Image 1 (cartoon, rainbow, N blue to C red):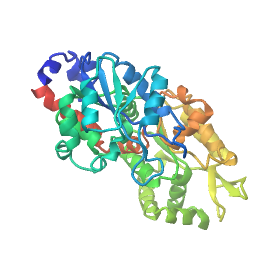
Image 2 (cartoon, rainbow, N blue to C red):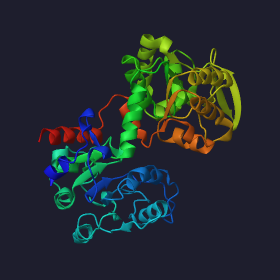
Image 3 (cartoon, rainbow, N blue to C red):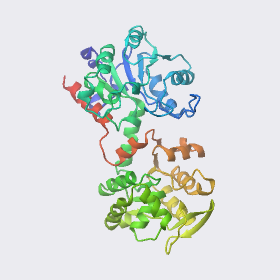
Image 4 (cartoon, one colour):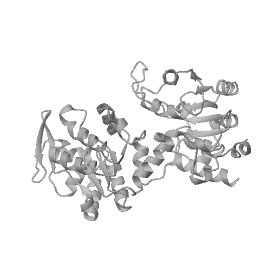
Length: 420
């Protein structure tokens, strides 16, 4: 099976360190495709956001001459939305304008017989992969390859495709297990994520500005450290709780309310790391010059020099918006992750929205997943960015210079199969 497929490889396949849809002729082949269809759902089982579904459409439409077996998950054990995948098959059918069969089985007799009966052009969606207890265990790909899921599904498939970038920072069974035993390729979502985020880290188009905010301080500080030490970024502009930590590290009295929040989130140790980064890269790190305080849900702006308040900081101030927006819009490369404030409240959404608007005017622009992507969607400007990432944690890990198990597994598979 492998030799026949390998002979149909694109002649240019040696140029990448992983294989893509372009490298193998998938016509008539059975493709086991890992997607991420995990989405917010209401108590009635209605899917509230179809953005992840829409992101995978380009990949699925290129597989119209293959037999496509989709593996995906919804939520995790213990959560109220840990459900079967039938609603997902219905929504995907609607978006694809064709029937996607839901199979209420992962690798049992029903799933196996359904795969065997498939014809060219058929697409089926298997049951929630996390219904199988071994799916979410963090293990090496070789260990995953010995599981019942891999042993039963792999012989029925010709190729494994990973198009689920957003879960590829975890070495879960359905992400890395099949790469050990099947020719393995990246789907279009995965390919675009790798290309776009790599471009953000390439240092080729200057100036390069990173805009890091939100409440996940340790993640943003990891990215700051990586891009400044590697010389990837000319400037890192910090906002949100990330900025509060850097302001505290710079000796600014940010008040008990803000220090209390940092302590509650377990980020006090990040102040020392921020202080060390400021000592090494002071000219490269942009701090707010004013902030917006929350006084009885009303916006009250105050300059950072001399700041001494017990009110919570919920946004950057107007002067900071103007200063940061100018740097962002003049940049050749911009990478944005995390909101500038509590943008869910109208009074404190201004900073986030203004920086997002500035990002759309830069040369090449990347928006990380999560809240910042949601804010861009709310503004109706998502399409004006060069790339909006589908993965929050995966995006952060990539930008922090960490190796993502799902991508490394694809690279390992490509090396092995090229040697044969």
